[in-house]
Image (cartoon, rainbow, N blue to C red):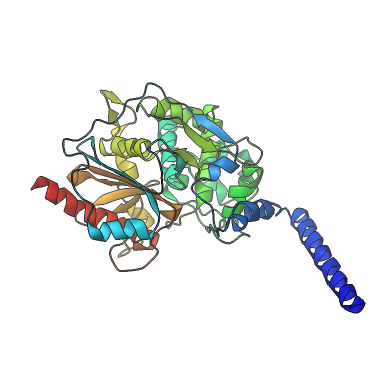
Length: 399
């Protein structure tokens, strides 16, 4: 009995020593962020980031002004969700579905006890917001042009021959050639580090460029974070303030937003982490649909909206689907055409101009199946369920 107890103690001691060595190794190699990642994901029964992670991070407020609630459509919530769409929404843990038709609130549904005032993570939908702030900085003269070299704002990259060729526009178009691995699930990769680590600026500015800028489209969250650093330096203001000033207040958002910060609480995690309600996300979609015009004012130049929502054909090879503009996904092969702000786990803001529709879906999972439903299927089959089924509902409404 004593020998068994002694063996158990030895094994336990070896295990404790191994854990200590692993932790020390993580700190020595600068990968201690993994410990925070384990705490906020695996210990919560998840394998990736979650839509309510803002409760575990330091956040900066995106202040609202005078709230202007959506006017309700005459057929508000009178059209039933199709069975096909309902199954899709429930199967992938949807929490909110909002549809704006002709500038008015047409459909509004919530699940899992979510309230209309509940905020949650936009994930990569925020990339589009950052590019909108880039265009505002350009309109205000803080940035000279999309072709301005990034080293004008980031002298840290001087001497890097590839970086010196990179322009401001390359970040928004995802053509920078930056060294980045896009993955929300692998713990040892720059995307996970940016999400959980302390100093996001230091991380971004210490990496290199590995491909010729201005070439082929490659979706990298690092591009948006670098663009955010550039905007912050160009304007002298943080992103939360700029988003509030240029869009949150003028749009009459109903709730304050929150933008999650890095571990040091110094900079917004620009590539992922605006937190807002479905109703307020829908206003960004409606602003895009209205080409930057809102309540008698031009909040952002219509030419800049056009640049965002039209495919950037030069970034794609001949015969290859052009699926991205400037920080917005596009499907101009679908009938009718649409464009979309897309985020991890199926956060969606979809705009269908021909039908005057804006769709917002928020939830905890996305449909990853490949069903050959469209050129954006690799970003989530659910996009086409949302578009096609709501178009059916819209047709029923017209009848």
